[in-house]
Image (tube, rainbow, N blue to C red; front, side, top):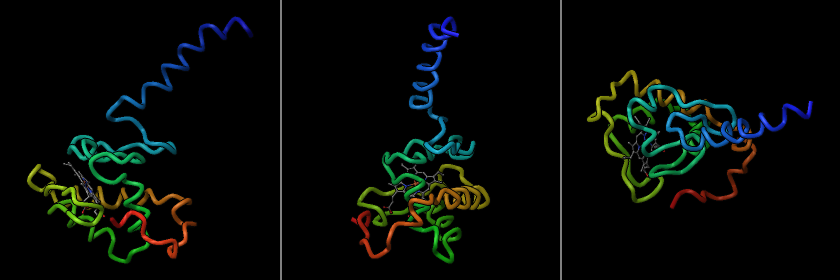
Length: 132
Ligand code: HEC
C-alpha cells in the first residue's frame, strides 16, 4: 500500500492544479461550463464561481433565480448587453459577437440552474450587498 503513495502524490497535485488554470475548467461544485459559454467567449469575463470582469454565473443565478421572467430578461441582456445591474462595467452586446437568440436563451437557462442551496437560504432582508 505504501508503495503507491510516492507515485500517487504528484498526480494528485497535478489534478488539483489543472482546473484552476484551464479556461474550460469546472467551477466549484462539480459544475461544468457549457461549451457555448467557452466558445462564445463568455468565460473571458465570467466564471461559475469567481468574479472576473463580470459577476460569477452563480451570483447571477442567486439574484435572478426566483424572478418570474428571469430567463427571458437575461436572454435579452446577453444579446443586447448590460450596464449598471452589477456595477459600472458594461457587458457589450454579445449579439455582435455572433450569439444567436437561441444560444442566449440556452445560456440564460443554464445560468439559472446554478442557483445554489446557499443562495436559497440567504435572507432577502439582508440587504442587496451586490447592488453597488
Ligand atoms: C467583455 C466582458 C463580458 C463578456 C464577453 C460577457 N459578459 Fe456577461 N457581464 C459582463 C459584465 C461587466 C456584467 C455586469 C453588467 C451590469 O452591471 O449590468 C455582465 C452581466 C451578465 C449577466 C447578468 C445581467 C443581470 O442583469 O444580472 C449575464 C446573465 C451575463 N452577463 C451573461 C453572459 C453570457 C452568457 C456571455 C457570453 C455569451 C457574457 N455574459 C459575456 C461582462 C461580460
